[in-house]
Amino acid sequence: MIGYRNYLNNIPELNFQEIKTSEYINETLTLFGIEVHKNIAKTGLIGILKSNNNHSERNIAIRAEMDALEFENGNKHACGHDGHMAIVLGVAEFFSKNRNCFEGTIYFIFSPAEEEGAGCSEMMKNSFFNSLEIQEVYALHNWPDLKVGQIGISEGAIMGGDNSFIIDIIGMGGHGAMPEQTINPNNYIGMVIEKLKEIENKYNVILTPTNITSGKSINIIPDLATIKGTFRYINRGNEENVIKDLENIRINNISIKIHIIKGYIPTINNKECAKICKKIVGDMVGVELIQINKPSMATEDFCYLLEKIKGCYVWLGSNDETNSHKLHSSSFNFNDKILNIGFKYFRDLIFNRLPIKLFKINPQFSDNLIFLGFIQLATDYTLDMEISDVLSQINGVGWRIKKLPFLGGYTDITKDTFEKLKNELKNSASGFGENIGYGKLSSLSLACTSMSFTLGHKILSQELKKGYDVKINDTTTSILSAIEAISIKLKVQNINISLLTPYIDNIHNKYQKLMKSIGCNIIVERNLNLTNDSLSSSVTVESIEKIIDEMITINPNIHIFIIVCSALNVTKYGFIDKLEKKYKKYFITSNQALLWNSLKITLPNEMIHLINKIKGYGMLFNL
Ligand SMILES: [Zn+2]
Ligand SMILES: [Zn+2]
Image (tube, rainbow, N blue to C red):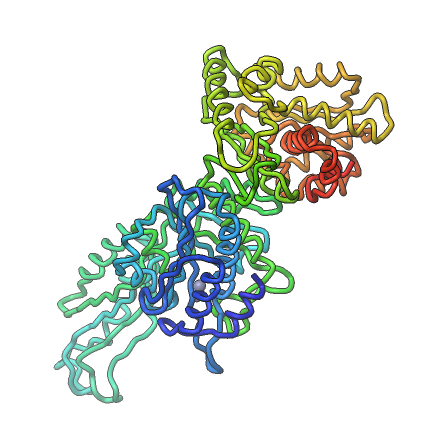
């Protein structure tokens, strides 16, 4: 992405003149094999990427602006739009290479003339653009008021609306020495400005007089005084009221005329979409979610997309000790450190909005390939990403995921839900037996602790195995198997365990019993007592780290730290590595253990050493 950024940074162009920029984006997207539609609102473009397995009617758009700003010594990308374009190109590149990772259509919108000219609004007048029927649209802006690693989200307005006003005070001119024969408009300027202040306070808007003109010579009373200014607001209802009140300004019998020049409307996020974005950001390792309650009074032409299409616009923190320049300043330079954060945000957002129903990657697989199946609960948000991340590190292994629908409280599986689950399980298992064209199913793993406890391993195997000769695995079995492998490696018989579970007492108790039964000492334990899965996924990585800190301080003689919950975000990219490095202990998490054990029981002997090559998921893979 740095390469894209540098290239774009060198060709800054002004509104509707983004010709070289447009050409470069066209070439780059075409290189990725993405269909490009050019010349939308002069220089705007749209890249269209459909997933390989395109059974879904769903689509999502992400947008970057293309224009630069004009300075005395030439054009410059002083708002960081070069960085935004680089991020969107990075996302386009990633998904163009992973067309099996999502289901639906991704639109990459490159809009001209954000700063002046409402490029987004112009694009929306294009009939091709409208024919796409975009369902959701997202954008980000680098934000020097937030730190690198922070992302700011508002559930409503995030940027203001901007109109201009011109107030003519019409008097009757004459000789400066004979004011009694005239109506001097200058006498009323102060009163009009006072009225502006009143309206400002009444509606909580900004009405700033910026330019006052009246008269030319010292001894002539002019006919006219004019006050010009900027009118900024958040609430569109207020906008109308303010205009009404401005039109109703009456001072004595003087004639006052108001003229409003409409500018950008406020940028207002869709609440539901903003909540989704907050969830995505909350799940990102090393990223802090900042709740924005006070919108910026600056404007943004993304407002027009959000007026018609639901979506969300976020601030990507960009301030650090090396880069704190303000937007639109002549010294501004986009902070390259945030390219990757922006990329991950959009990537995870697209994974969330265009989820795969059937997961497959590397369609060049042949018949004799090893092929792993996974059954994942709907509330487990990260497993599919982890599976693709881990298994793509091994050549010759394919996989498919079936997501079980949300059936209500997994936290407490009743007899009713048990029957439902069994049926779902059967359906899921039979789905894996279809001829899917690349390889034979070798193993099937169930990614759910509570289910494997409730159904029991034997029943589980029976249900899953029906008709297929495959190896069966589940989360609990995997965790136990991982403990065993580590104790062999450490040459310790009675392993000291620290156990962290997120919810449901009985799961915690069952793990206690199980671990004791295989000779483990649980020396520190903690149950977060969260009431459900979605709560557990809202627990931040930082807070988990804090809890781990506390637990390790209580008794540092831990061999293995076990975190039983995939939804706790702990298994996400690199986090286990980070914990192991920091605490010098083995860490086991549900998803990590499940993936490791699935490979261990599935791979043939000549391939088993490939497990050691997997990076980013802890020492368990390197035993
Ligand atoms: Zn700008
Ligand atoms: Zn900008």
